[in-house]
Length: 289
Image 1 (cartoon, helix red, strand yellow):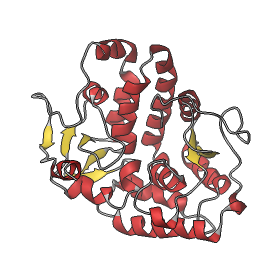
Image 2 (cartoon, rainbow, N blue to C red; image 1 turned 90 degrees about the vertical axis):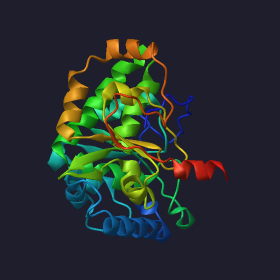
Image 3 (tube, rainbow, N blue to C red; image 1 turned 120 degrees about the horizontal axis):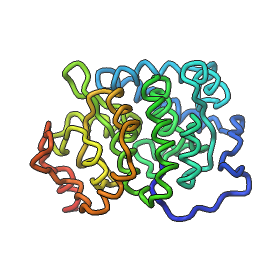
Image 4 (tube, rainbow, N blue to C red; image 1 turned 180 degrees about the vertical axis):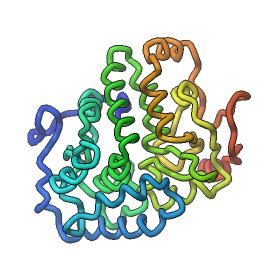
């Protein structure tokens, strides 16, 4: 994810685009077991909670061997579906490299997996978050186009110094988005579907705000990276999200955003479409220790 993070040092084994060989055979039996444990747990939990396109896309992860997916086999399957591929990277990568991969329909996935004692939380995205969380929706043609459009927009954003604003769009859609589906709310963001706890919290808890998605509003809103979200934004469908991204002239939007104050994560504006006015009980309890 692009966040405007500090300069990163490219490891010697990485190419100029920050990709590395996946070297699938180096993963241990224990590491494959971690993937299988996480995969089984989330696959069982998500029906009825995750958006149908995500559940449909899980098929691309059913490969010939159990354990961490072999990116070559996964990419071959995904390429036939939407023209995307998965490439291995050492971890977080610079913004320009990240955007370039997305713009060219390549999804960069961390080439490591959490340990067995980190099943429920890992701050830096690993291969389970990146592949289980993101890849199923890359099999959906509309969402696949949205991801490419985001990458193209990210490359353009570099000259405006607005990455921190654009990162919020990614955060509140690709990572932590909710969607209306058959009069219900469903999860689709990778940060939620790959999290055992947040895939329940995001839909069932009365703590967070749930607000209708608005592009400018979302890009003004701060977010937290260290715990469950305090606000979620809800889209109507992927087609509308793609349309807004493709039809918005971001240059004047970035200029306007510079004149507006950032909004704290718990803010509710009078013009917001409020589906849930959260109690913030979870965040308050955590803050109180």
